[in-house]
Length: 208
Length: 171
Image: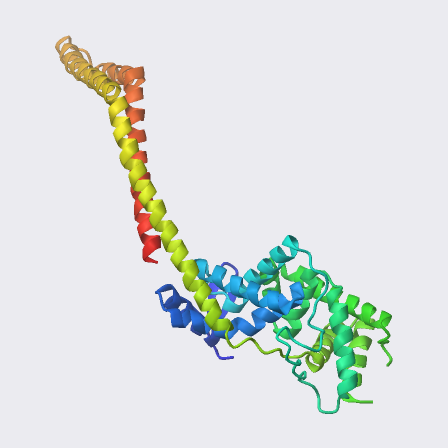
């Protein structure tokens, strides 16, 4: 990503990259009443937002509804968005809180992302994999990992998705989850430990 | 041993041995190897934009209703206040005005008497200060000043709310 400027706020230097500037322009256009600018924001972030929410609530159809709610909330509070922050972090934060609220309202069990079919009945696409991997073994590990993920606490699940699916830094994860960076790091570390433990219990020993 | 096995063993070994950074990288490799990219429904963006438009319309309606309620509330409230409080306000204002006139007379008389009697400047000034303090401490004056301040604050607040509602509906 092209980093061409930076800004000092308090004692912390916030890097401003091309992505942040593009996002800020889209936000400004959306605030000025441009529907197409907000639609671009929706199209840009729909996949990661739905993916995060689906991991938290465990239901792909519900996740799409909650993602929609996330974008509506974002639209309503767009004026309050801090343009020196990443738009993605802000959207993830709204999505995370919306998903947790939904979980509190109705406590569904588990995650259905490990099923072999999607909500619309279509078979799930194959994962992005190294060519040498055995597809059967890979699917078995994917299912085991999904099942283990379902047993994590929602914050840990979010931390894992944000870290390893979306590639966020610990600072950004902290911002999304509303916790300090060190706590975000600890969430990820503990979640990985717990996943190791759960995978071992499921027969996926460390020396397979 | 295939690539996935290797990545998995690397992750587990790194975490078992407490090599956090290496475990972080290795788990990322495993996660990427097994994760699946689920396609988003092609109608999702369009449905979301419809929901956003509906929410914006609802917000604008709510802002319009709030503004209308505020305007009518202010009109009726103002009329009721004028009807029920007019006599009280007039008598309070008249009393306040009388006290002000009293003060002015006291100031002029005090200054003239003082200078005529050859009193020094500071004693005259002290006398005037006493008269001013007596004026400010008068309960009628205090009530009038507070009432005027209250009306001014209410008017400013109402104006700000009206302008705010306008801004919101424009947005």
